[in-house]
Length: 297
Image (cartoon, rainbow, N blue to C red; front, side):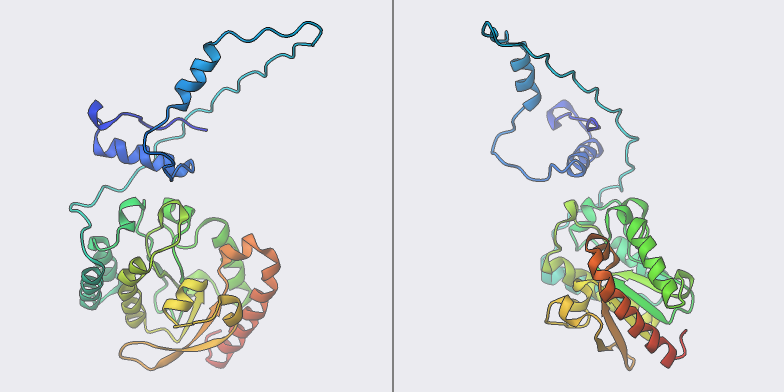
C-alpha cells in the first residue's frame, strides 16, 4: 500500500490542497468510514509491540523464525486534483434544483451546457470528484446512450465509459453496426460519488435538468438507457431493471415529439455478472431491429 501524500494536520500548517490530497488518498485506499470518536495510531501501537521483549519459548518446543517484513512499494505519482470550488455548497435541495433548471434552460448549445455545469455549485459531489464527466457527442448524433454515474476510470481520465466497461461498450456498439463516432453518450449524474457510494435522491434531482436539456438540444431519434438509475429517473420506470430491460418506452422531450427509448443493462454490470450478457445480446437484437426500422443503421 502506498504512503499518503501528506499526513500533516491543520495545526501543522498544511494547506487546503494537501488536506484534500490526504483525504483522497484515504478514500482510494478504502478508508472512507470513521469507526470511533478519537483517532487511533495503529503505526505507533505496532512499533510499541515490536519494541517489547518477546516471551521466552518453552523448552522442548521449536522456535519458528518470524516472517520477514515486506518492503512497502513506492508511492505513485501524485494525482492532480481539481481546484476546490470558490464558494461553499450551501444550497438547499429545492434551491439547487431551481438553479439547475435556470442554468440548463439558458444553455443554447452543448458547449454552453458544459460551461453551465462547470459553474454549477448545487451538487456536493462536485467537491470530491476529479473531473466533470458529462457527455461525449458525435456531430449530428441521432442515437443517445444515457448512463448513470462516472466510474473510477471515467473520473480519473475525464472520459465517458472509459476502461474495461468502455471496451465492452464499444464491442456492443459494433455488434449493431455502430461506433462512438456515430452516437452520443451522457451521464445522468456527471460527478462520481466518493467511494462509489449510491447517489442520493437530491443529488440526482439537482443534475436531472442538465440531462433533460442536453436531450432537448441534441434532439435524438432514439435513446438507450444503461442501468437502473436513468431508467428510473428519465423513463419513469417503477419496476426493477431486470424486469424492464429489453422493453421500449416512449420518452417525451421538451418541445419535441415522443421518441422510443430502450432500457438495457450497464456494461459495468455485465462485467460483474457475465451470465447476464445473454440478456444484453437479446436487447441488442431489439435495438438493431429498431435501428433498421428508422433507417439509422
